[in-house]
Image (cartoon, rainbow, N blue to C red):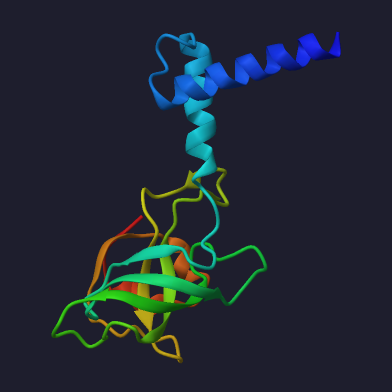
Length: 166
């Protein structure tokens, strides 16, 4: 009895894995396909933690940074939190050079966050604005939408530099 159950489970898991690597259409019906894709989509939405690569959305000269440490919380950083990051890509004539360790404020996070009115906000990417140790932005412009939750976290200067407040 147990051996037949194990063989059935192994056959199902092999067929599911084979279907995932090839194509969903022949293996799962549409409701199972939607549930599986939603599950996979939700797996990507996590805190900004160590080794997370973020896009820089100001004109400080850096393009991409990698999080070294989130300064608040054990799990990781969310919207408005400060992180320590290492610059991975930079423009040749910018203020910040590749390899430099910098501070940054998370202005866009793919993980959803609830608002006071019951709505939720989440973005398509993880983005950061580079700041100095006092919390003042290094760049003079901030590109893309910035959530108004930064006002509660005392990052008003970033809000004044932003093009669009979401």
